[in-house]
Image (cartoon, rainbow, N blue to C red; front, side, top):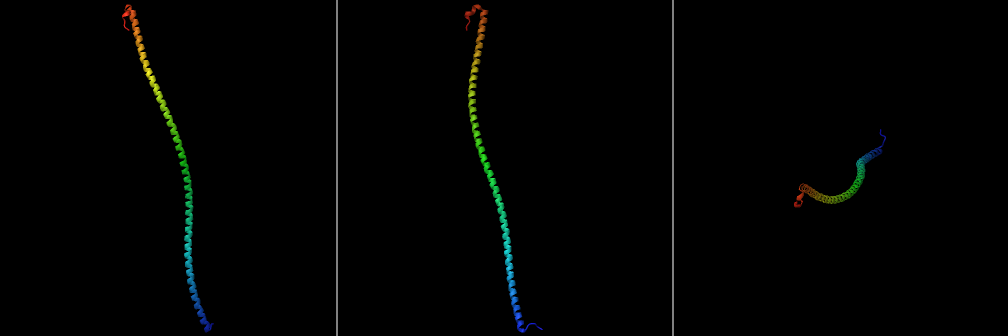
Length: 157
């Protein structure tokens, strides 16, 4: 016994066929949408990872930039202090050079004075030697006068 009449059974089979076609079509659409969803999800995940990598890289680059700015500031300060030190060294060099020039002039003056004194000392030695010779000669003449009192007039000076 059948619950459906002939028309109802054929309607049932027609509807069943229609539902099967519709289900097959919707299943294909669902598979297609699932595939697109998975592709989009994979693309989204890849883009999200890439975004995180870029943000991480950006943070590293910002840190490097800040460190390089600090390093640059320190280098500029070092250059500035080095330039000041060079200026001070040049001033010191100039002062020392002037002192050396003054000392050289003073040495030349002292050498000239020393030369004068040495010359005067040499002249004094000659005078002392001549004076000593004259004194010995005088003493010798005195001795001869004493020994030979009558010969005084024939002595040659």
